[in-house]
Image (cartoon, rainbow, N blue to C red; front, side, top):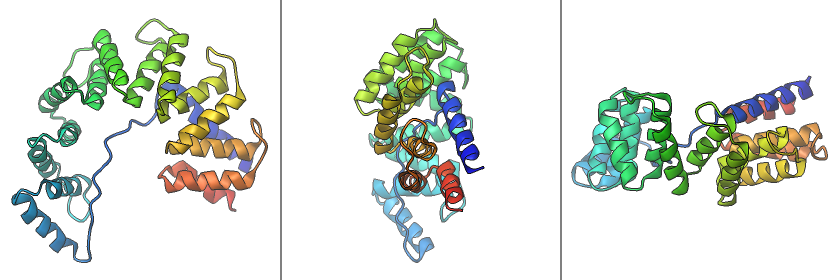
Length: 278
């Protein structure tokens, strides 16, 4: 029963990876440092923010955005991100645009993405590319524009964009299929420590999608992605060690990897870890 469940989890992971349903990496949140009296801390941060301490403004923005310690308030978060954005903090500008997207204020978010992309904020280019690809947020579908933006973002070193660019070639849904080109893009990004590209490339080798199957490369790529904090790769590597199909069976190693994945926030690994200990 345990083997069947873990095998099913792995197959689902493979399907999602090849289908291009991988999680999109967003900017790393600013860590809000609470104290015993959280309300007093927030009040003090508001005073400090109003006095010009932008670091505290950003902390408060995340507090309102996530709802931690206070009621969630996207409008307040946008106001605070905007204040920090005006100081030249591109990350805050990007977070403001993402939050505007969340409340469907696309008429305000799209200009921010465009401005940031022109300034070399490559995560913003990827955001725009996705909207042009699907014709979302009031933008007309424009595959050519989407591909240009994916490439610009990828060339700028944003790994998620490289995976998106590669998957468009591999799937051949919106442009002419070219698996060789897709694999090359993934390989180049992985060689630059692009965790998502390493993860996706591993499954190309596992399934033999346009290339020869190669279990040794699967293990090498999943290990690299795991070490780069791609925690679903740690989970899938653990399953490989548990099943013993592409590597010698090692349940101790599998549990260590599941714990690492779970500690990293990958919930499927937490479930697998709990199940493995029964």
